[in-house]
Image (cartoon, rainbow over all chains, first blue to last red; front, side, top):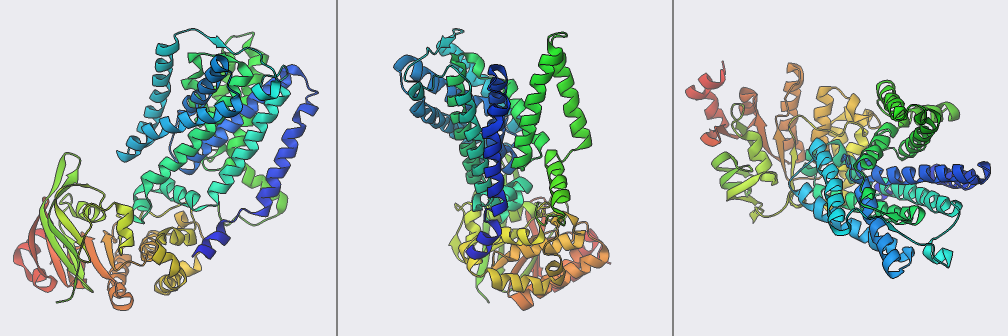
Length: 334
Length: 239
């Protein structure tokens, strides 16, 4: 079968061109924004959300585990990178990988027993949500409520310490493209295939000979590592280390964006992140100042509307547009 | 007597603290169709899951082709030539028929013999050949059951565990399912352990049978003899 599977799952040319196209568009965004300080910062935040959701897609979309701990793994990457940089002057280029290493370690420590005892669905969601809070308290016990500021350091490239946002934007945009590429690679690999079976029906997958625990754990580890690296970049952007990095709300929002995008669809997930994050910022700017908090209300309403009108998520919309554009028959495989 | 393919030796098993099976022993010989019948909640599915290693085993042994597999994890047992068709079909609904079959062929042996097995499965179930690119969720109940069996066959097992293959199917389709069970032995040389609630049909296709009640084997013997067993006839309303 190797031939059969390989042919079936090869990364299509179409997708590769799509990825290159996306990279070019993302590269041009700051130009269109006229290198405006505020807009580029917004775009950077959108890229942050998009990369995080793209990473979440591996555990949430492909493996079908409702993981709410994206912010925990991101924050682990951030605090490791940040503290090593602030206290020891270690370049974040190394720090972010150490941070990712810690994130993976925590993921394994939590994931192994979780999957071993078959915790899934809402219970998995609760558990991961609790993980964010637990890690936040642990950080609080060690560092207290103090915020640690990372000073500006030279040379800029070594310490990722820039005075403008463009570089951060490009770093995170590159992460988006890389993580989408990883997603596509996984989807077209044996791992992606196993994960699809696990997401569809865990018991059936197990009865067919898939080592369910192992592959779920692999998905969790990849996701945690990516979130950790994103965190490492993020901390060089904000420069503020605080227990507030462990943000349960961000973990939930990440999953929400992934779900609105359409589970298992990387295009949908990234699109949802871009739209929802931009929308949230827009609403905050438009009405948040006049009626504090109202932007979240509208944001929630929009989520409900999307959920009612398009329960399959934005992915179905993308598929529809694609089919209209290329006059193609119904895609054979989703 | 033919070789013993599957042996359960005094199995005590359950889920966590919840004890379901009490000293269950059974044997399946090569080329046999063995039926495991009994009322709801007797532990039939638990028995199959124990064979696959998906329950908590307190004591006893599971032997596959003479090899003690008690400590071997589920996914490795498949490589030893056993596959279960789970209750309620549990096909991968968003994947196509063909992809479901691909998912069945995970072991090395199954991958090497992929084309042969695919041919075999398509000859068995011509409907599936027609619908190979159809999304599995759109299949009818009967077709979905065929796909579930076909998917299990793709792993090229010696022994096939069928868990309630007739569950929720129209009476006409139920008869087809039992025909397929017979054909699996005759044309594909499979050994079969069949769990069913259709006691009469099962005993008609099976060589031997075990009756499970409240986690214990209460009756065993030749299927034909059991069919005439007065107690059984009364309990299961075989008229």
